[in-house]
Amino acid sequence: MAISEGDRIPDVKVAVPDDDGNPQPAQTGDLLSKGKVVLFGLPGAFTPGCSRAHLPGYVVKADELKAKGVDTIACTSVNDAFVMHAWAADQNVNGTIVMIGDGNGEFAKAMGREFDGSAIGLGTRSQRYAAVIEDGVVQKLFVEPAPGVTVSSAEHVLDNL
Image 1 (cartoon, rainbow, N blue to C red):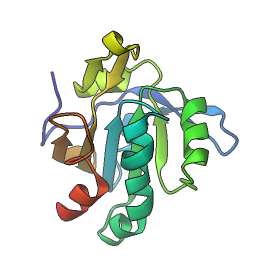
Image 2: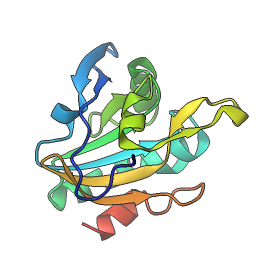
Image 3: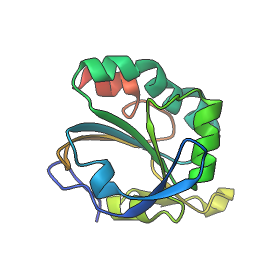
Image 4: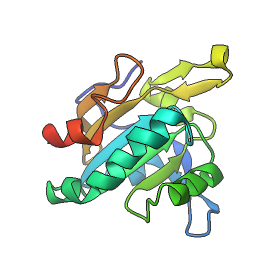
């Protein structure tokens, strides 16, 4: 069942890279339940839309999001923590965004936001979305209705904070 506004964020085991890129086990309940969090999910690290628009938008707008009371900005993808670390370095994230590796897609599934990309060689991935979470409860949820980065963009989230 897909998560909706008013629902508590699922608590799933994931991995976040440490400063050296080594995977550290974490729980989404711990990562995403303190204060105001903007979480965005996307299909894959190093993919065109994710690398040209989605993640870079949040890197550029991080200070504006923080100025509007956001405590944590987090990105999740069905990639391992090693890939998330390499992608963060490539995109000059510099610690502004918590990069969550959902290597098995369990968080995407718990969110009800997985999709089958097998037809194009991607396997199970995360839909593209953004959520505003306060103390573990989804306040706003923006799921992309079609390919592209519109309602899940940093700009759209900023306009809706």
